[in-house]
Image (cartoon, rainbow, N blue to C red; front, side, top):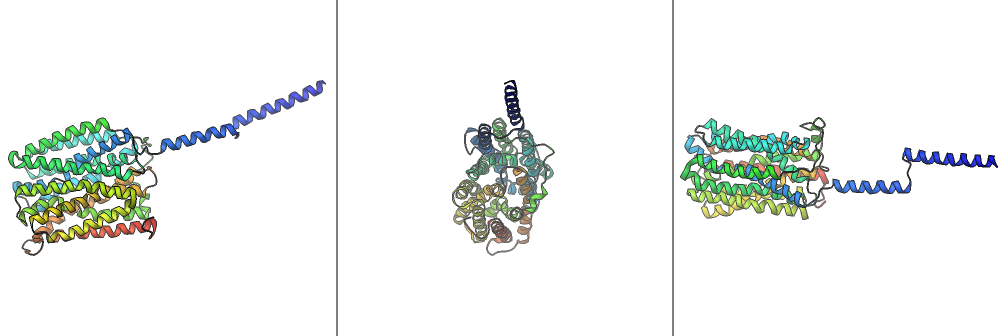
Length: 452
């Protein structure tokens, strides 16, 4: 009997040890397996972009205000270009460097500011950028000579906008998946609305009160927006290790579609900003419009950019996809530029300005969405967008000065386009080449199936 009891106790002891081993080694049993499955699914859901909600749409507003402050000012440089030419007694080539260095630095600095978002420095980047922009505007208001305007209106604004632009756009992209292109288009609308507001301020103040008060009033608007931006800014991304990701990820260029895409952007942005710089000079010198009409045309150019930023994005999200939509809008932009030499009267200039504003707005809004569509998830997206911006920065730097040289070379030409003909052909050709390379990007990514 005692032997039977001892044998039973040994069996129970062995069974207890087995249960203990299962617990310590994590052996799979029905209940723990079920619990782990639920936890994994919950983790998946928390990692997905919210695709809406108060915080997500607040970041859309934040990005919108960032582009209001940055590209809104860039898109009104066409007002300042002839003013600086006349008051500084400088040729178009020299003055255009102020605007060109501005755009160049926006895209070039984007490489580093995109990394700042990935590293967790989002709000710091916004604060430093806003401070530099305000300093530049109020110091430019006191400037009387070319080098000071180049420094404060060009360099300061470029560095400031480069620090805030890429992080804000990329941060918005992390909040959306299905409606990402639409959200980014709403952000891009800030550039068009800012262009309208700043152009209206300049049209009211520039001739009556001079450049100083024009820039000061613009500075106060920027100050108000900057307070809202820093107050509302949030990020859903966890900061990665500051040493874990390089500022430039050269491996990205091993992706053929990404490399072709940024090459296409080089050609596109060598031409797309040029009309914003020279449209006022064109309508006053070639079509002989008065100053008020030239201001109205700039307002139309910027105003048409609002539907141009939204409608192509909606088509992209619902029907075409980002690359297909970008190919289409780039093709339309190129065709519009090739039609520019045929515009010989003020009534014809109105629809052309609206058509170009619409198309160029689409080009501006879909740039980041195209890069995002080529990236798998959100990992490293800020760096890739920043790298793409740095590539096109060189094109943006050369575009307008080349346009100024082409205007000087065209002096004396009395045919279509007048002295602006070679500039018009140059811009249309750049957009055409860019469109062709975008088509190659599409084929390299998904083959010849149009709707894939």
